[in-house]
Every structure is written in C-alpha cells, then in structure tokens.
Amino acid sequence: MDRKGLLLVLSGPSGAGKGTICDKFMQNNKDVLLSVSSTTRKPREGEIAGVSYNYITKDEFETQLKNDGFLEHVHVFENYYGTPRQSVMDNIEQGTDVLLEIEIVGAMQIKKRFPEAVLIFVLPPSIEELESRIHKRGTETQSQIKLRLERALKEMKEINEYSYFIINKDVDESADYMKCIIKAEKSSVRRYSEELLDFYKEEK
Image 1 (cartoon, rainbow, N blue to C red):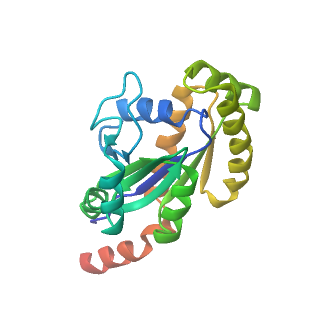
Image 2: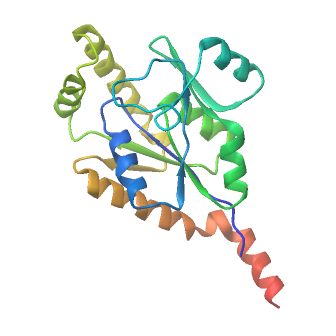
Image 3: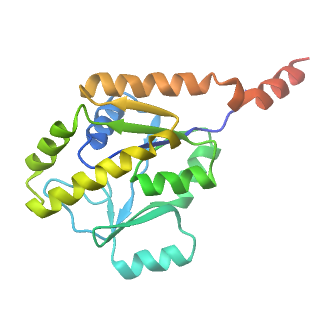
C-alpha cells in the first residue's frame, strides 16, 4: 500500500529545547527528512548555512514570499523565518516523512492549510528551567529575556491546537516520544482509511 509521507511539525516556546530534540531524533531516524528553514537573521556561532538554516536577504525572502514559495512564514524579533514549499511537498508525495521545527505562529499556518499535519508541542519542565536555558545561551539582553518569557507564557495557551505534547525533561526520552508519535500516526485509521480500503479492493 503506497502512502504519502507525514508532515510533522515540532514547535514550542523559545528555550523549550525543540532544536535539541530534533538533533537527537534525527541521529537515529535517518528515514525522516528535517526541513531546513530559510531566515534573514545572521548565523549564530556554530550554525552552518544549508544545515542549520538557509540564510538569505530580506529582499530574497520577500520575493519568494510573493511567489508563494513558503508553506509558512513568521516575522520574529525583526527577522523572517519560513519553510520552503516545493521540497517539502515533493518529499511527502514520494512517501517521505518530513519534520518541520518552526515557531508556533508558523505551526498554526500549517494547521490551517494542511489539517492532516501532525503538530507536536514541546514544553519545558518549568518556567524557571526555561529562563535558565535562555540565560545559558548568552545571546540575549536581560530585557530580551524578559520579552521571551512573557511570549512563552502566551504561546503555551496555544497547546490545545496541537495533536501531541512532550515535556522536555530529558532529550533522549523526548526523542523516543517523537518516534512513538510517528508510529501511532502511521497506524491511524482516520488518516489511512481510504488507502486501506482501496488496497484490499485491489487485492481481491
């Protein structure tokens, strides 16, 4: 039975650890494709162009946006972020599962356009731990950290829009939860009922 790939969306407040979970998950799940987002922000230390993000100019981003080149996009802290459309849709049509690690606003755009997408919300163990993680980055001022925490509390109210949640206490455990979620979705009657019926009709 031929099935399309899953469109997986992982998001959560900044500092919840979604990037770390993605890295750990992808180490042991090579059959899933991690989509590389495009952004207009400058690379952080250790980030690699084409792997961490596609780094493009504001003009390039806005041109692609006008041409419907993104599945979703957001404007956060004076920078654009977006998921390139064509490569994601091509892989899903070919049966490959594609994982997006994106902002919550972008996840809601995906849900509206692709209700079959699997949305997973990453939560920190506590607000105190979230603040500690943001501090450890050393990339934000105190006022920026305060804004991020305020935004995180607001974003957590969106959890009811998601299919699943993961409380990120331990990255290995969180990555295992992701694998379990994918297995459950691949056995979803709701998702694959038509394909199943067609398959067994053909078998006759």
